[in-house]
Amino acid sequence: MASRKAKITKRIVDAVPPGQTVWDTDIAGFAIRCQRQSKTYSLKTRIAGRQRWFTIGKHGAPWNPATARAEALSILAEIGQGKDPATKRDGASKEPDVQMLIERYLTEEIFSKKKPATQTQYEGCLRRLANPIIGKLKARHVSFADVAALHHKLRDHPYQANRTVAVLSAMFSWAELVGLRERGTNPAKGIRKFKEKQHDRFLSADELGNLGQAFEGLLKSKEINFFAIAAIRLLIFSGARKSEILSLQWEYIDFEGARLLLPDSKTGKKMVQLSAPALEVLSTIPRLAGNPHVIVGKNDGAHLVNLHKPWKRICAAAGIENVRVHDLRHSFASVAASGGATLQIVGKLLGHTQIATTERYSHLAEDPIKQANEEVGQKIAAMMRGKKAEIVQLKKGV
Image (cartoon, rainbow, N blue to C red; front, side, top):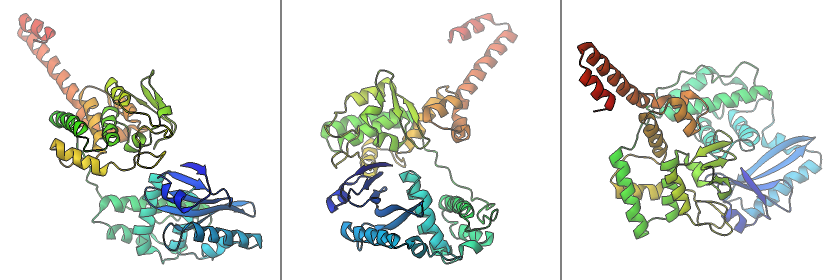
């Protein structure tokens, strides 16, 4: 997560973009952190040599720069008196409940170490889905049956149910490491996952053609933000993730090497190859003074955050339905796979770290194999019939 220093005021809080933390210049460790939408005040300090994080609260009543600053000073005052506010805030008894465990896990392990998208996912699974069901149970005594019942209760939404169990498993493993549960007692292990409906939506050649025409018309009419259209065109031509394109900075682009050198992505440091059409899109984008980002947002120095609305309008103009922005990445991969690229190459293009992630395109990679198999079979059949003319024609591709 990017960070900078400034005195935390309402103006600073309003302007902080997603994925950034602003550290206060007056109170050491006092910060405002913005995830995708919500903005949270926190304090990082040390107690008896151990680093501790305190989540003060989300921006909005009762928390604003003044009240959050006062709370930060109050916490520091308690520490100065030799007290440990963490024991009060974490309900530090020998038997904390799951709600207390969730807050401590998010504060100490997730908000301080994970990327914004992961933070949002973990927070949603734990606070919104798990806490209402098992939040009052004692963390040490949550059983397999408790987690299985939670999983079953979420059965109408298989993906969310499975992700919530996975996140709970990570949290309870952490609880074992910090002594809040006995080792080897993770109650979320062994839960049988629900079958998830995989969303395989690839744009056809006709749909890609319609998109191209829609872009031309929308650029001329200026109905949609230019940078939004540029972002979507880059997604189509690069196969990159939405977050990688939206947060792209000019310094990450190697024009001579025709590639993006991303210092950080979902899978860590990453290189994205750029085709000539992708480079052409980049050449049309103006650089704005004072903004390092390629896809510029509304706020000074920030990048565009949301493509949902412009994408819906583009789809309407192109006459295509049921396509998410993320499906542009799938479409890029499908064109590569059906064109003869091996799954290994497709995985490299997409930046996958495991071949299993690329397996969803295996049926597309079979198309050129089937074609080659058909050609071999036809040649052999012609040879067996002794028809040399047919063999010559097949060699020539007639």
